[in-house]
Image (tube, rainbow, N blue to C red; front, top):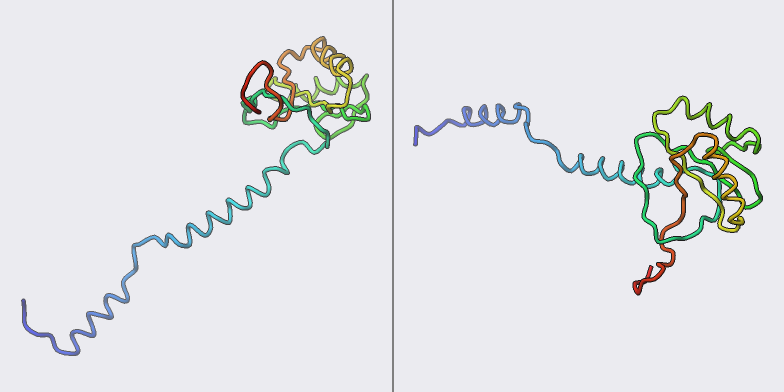
Length: 155
C-alpha cells in the first residue's frame, strides 16, 4: 500500500485522530434526559387538574376533547358549596364572576363538576342558571368506567 511509516509518523497520526472533534451524538445522555422529563411530567400532570375533591359519578361516556386553555369549571361540592376553579363563590355571585372570567378567555366551554351525592335537582338548578346566564357550551364532568345501559359489554 505504501512505504512503511516510522514510529514517529505513526504516533503523529494517532494524535491527530485524538485531537479531532467527534461528530457523533451521545444518544445515551439524550435518552437519560428524556426519561427524567417523562417521569417529571407523569408526576406533575395529575396535579394540574382542578383541586376541589369531589366524588364524580361514573358513566360510560368518553372524554370531551380539550383545547389549549385550561377549561373553566364550576364545581358543586357534597356540602353544597359552589366553586369556580378552586375559588368558592356565593350562588348570587356565580354568573357575574363567570362572565368576568370568561370575558378574558377565547374558549367558551364550561365544565360542570358535581359530587355524585348531590341531588339531581340541585345540579339542574345550577345548570339552568348557567344556561340563562348565557353559557351555552356546558359539559358535565364524570368519571369513566360506569355502567353501560342496554349493552352486554362490561364497563
